[in-house]
Length: 412
Image 1 (cartoon, helix red, strand yellow):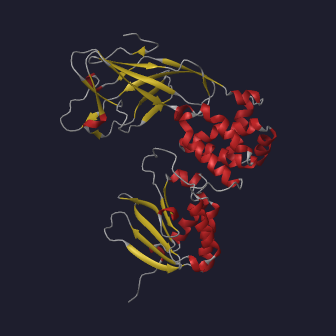
Image 2 (cartoon, one colour; image 1 turned 30 degrees about the vertical axis):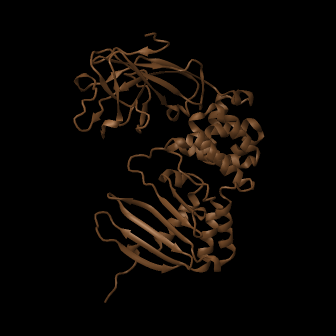
Image 3 (cartoon, rainbow, N blue to C red; image 1 turned 135 degrees about the vertical axis):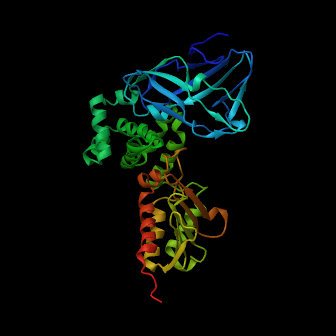
């Protein structure tokens, strides 16, 4: 079989792994997609994890270290017992391939050359399936490939040097208004600089914060910011969902007409804001957390102002319920917050959360019918850092006002 640019590893238990790197240099912040190839050189079939497209998997990337001068890519599913449908049967003398989208790990990396190796750690299979394992509970690896990362064309064309890029990114994280003025002075180049960083909302921590701050800064450009999002889309196919959300959010903030698919919901929300007597079918449910470890909390608010909070502490089997009434101004403020947050646009962007990260859920019914309902379940970091942070903060405060531990027990 021709190798066709594949960098093979030494092989283990009759199976060898190889990586094929992109043929062209990659732009910093663009897509990093590698092809992983497995070849069975033994006389017996081998069952491999990670090559079945219908079964979900996760990826990990560890940066180079002093004792390992290359980045380590691997499957992040080693602590789970996987069913038979998670594995692919690789017949003797055949190959199987899969695409590894590692864009999330290289999104903020500067230009340069990055060596990378894929490592197959032991993966456990359920039932009696004899899955392929590296020998002696070790790991099997591919050969090393080198990714060549260059600076974005848009940065070069706008005259953004490496030093200026670092200055702009640091200012974005600080919320420095001077940086916003500098970006606007760069015109289209400044808008594209921000648009490329929106993809980082798919990461975690500081990288995600950078993405959300970039989206906030893009609002300063008004309607032209949408053109910047469209301009970077071809270079960032890994972040299409994030860029689609950014486009929709920026159009909303620029005052553009509401898309037809959201018009019934937006019209009903505006009607409830202006006419209190039409709120008979209104129902909002907010669940900031619900797990066996941390317990659960759920708040329901009805159109007449009734507020019911149900709390089940961790380890408790019976929840506690408190009922109070929201004043008309408070209910009006809540409806205003729903409109200002563009709640009909909010949606999850990250596929995976951090370990033990809550996933707050919001359910909203304005009128009867599917067109007037929404359910949004996003990772906690998306709620707290993204455009819905003010709404989430308001809902948390409405819950905290009637926490069980803030109410004195009855003396009867």
